[in-house]
Length: 278
Image (cartoon, rainbow, N blue to C red; front, side, top):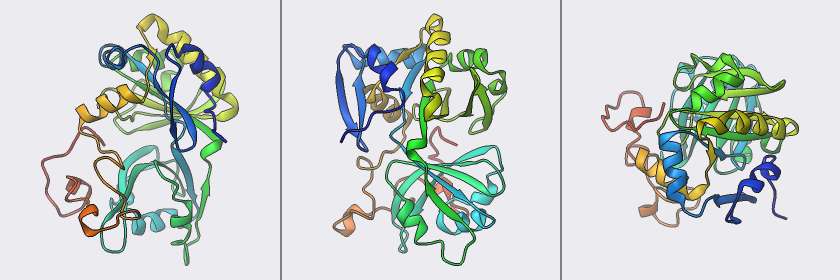
């Protein structure tokens, strides 16, 4: 059965094309307007809203959470302070890339990992000897990506807590009384934010963002515009720029982080090709 994002009821009303694809079992808008370029320029010139809810969301918590993740992730999670997020990757035993994602650190002992593929089983198999739990909370939350040069103006009208948020910083705050986590992250290479919303508050929050953003030229955008934006920003995508080592059927399909230009994630390796990502 195809799943619907917690924002689908509202955003589907704005979809003039009725074009959808499948993303992790969810309906995902390919584009809202007759041309993806209108949505692309909407993000680059003002602000756009993208439904990222199909991302998998894994909660990693417990006294050993940091120690556990320090051994699993290629990037040193110990450098990520509470209230910050970190782009990272994880590899198989031979150092070939399995996947990438963003790790959000809520406290000394609690993290949230967002990623394109399910990883609860993989991570849970590695927890032996650690006081840590890995839980799939994917359906408990929706995610809205508010991207573009006017995104800060829009969000600060709804919650002033994000006004001084640094790149890859995050804040736990409220929008219209709903508890949300806002991070200065995104997949467009532009000024942007992602809003993690409990599913039962999804419509209230998306309504507030749309109402506030409309005078600023805010418009929803779909996957086609997102692909244009992320390619322009030099951001990689699983299944396009790389194949997960889980699914590779020969050595030529397996890549290391260094071969993908991700040396800047790894200690002791110099690389001047760092893209617009934290």
